[in-house]
Image (cartoon, rainbow, N blue to C red):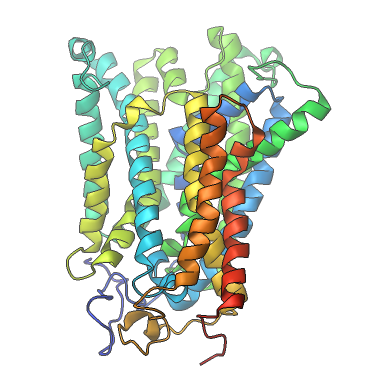
Length: 487
């Protein structure tokens, strides 16, 4: 990585575990604003807008949706602070800090799981952004409509062209390294806000404030008692939506100049930023009813319906930029580190990211991310996979290790190394992952298979996280593997 923020490889580090991307950083320079901008890029996406909009299908009133979004994001903030500290203190990314819990080789298990999930999300976000580009093509080059008629594997030729353009654009930004990515997200997040505000003001002006009802519930209106479990489910959905970047937030907090700077960035970027974004989403969606005669919760379709060339161009490009931002920070950087961790000398940070980019196309994401039910089900399954990894990491660092990490020991393959455990693996972490992951995944799959609307599926992340946390502590108490002295 041709970057000023590279790692320091000490003489004793084993090449099977270290390269300059994975080693502890020589210098940590990110400010609170950089973390704030990271979250702006993560929140201001078509996926975030559509996910927030999908909550109205649950039958909740607008104030209930806003409350659920806010409570969910505060939970995300607390958990992000927890996962940020070990990486900020040590200067290493998510897969490396896992070596202190899973073992120097066992850390590849959570790394591969997280990397695989990032591939799925990368495809989804690229597809959503490509739809913005497709609208621009159809508006300014009507002749391209012929390329949008037939489909192959669920997508038209024009759809593939737009997907390819976005794919290459994201790869180009990523390829320039972490410093270029930081500069990009510092600019992209605020730029999207400007357009979102302009869109909201325009639609409210067209509709007239007196004609806007903030009650957008698309389903049957619920009474107070009935709405409580639905709101809890919506809160859980918010946590599941952010569970991916939350798990590997250490990939970014490692660059923070201090833990306090990271916490300030999280405060501004999560509750403060997300509440404002959510209010904008609700106002914008509300205004679509009097202006267009129907509720539109997808900003791409909202811009399309305005039918002004400048609006379509500005809105379309903005949502493209927004989605490139979230895709790079959430779904490119994570697998870049995760896959590099598997074989540091053969898989560079860049190659790890490109593995994710290629894999995303093979998953044909446009076939399964197209309706609120699919969104909720997808988030449930992903949350079930991510929750256990989160719980185990937090239990290992805060409870078992008592916040002590021997950084150099994470880079040695010596059988006497602190984190070599049993052949490079900590069996307790693997047992805990199985004991928590299987029930969490079943909590999502079983209700779907039996056709039941069981509420338990909404809480797959929490089930996995809680079970992983408790199981790992129990296994370590019964048969200790991690030394708890300060070395």
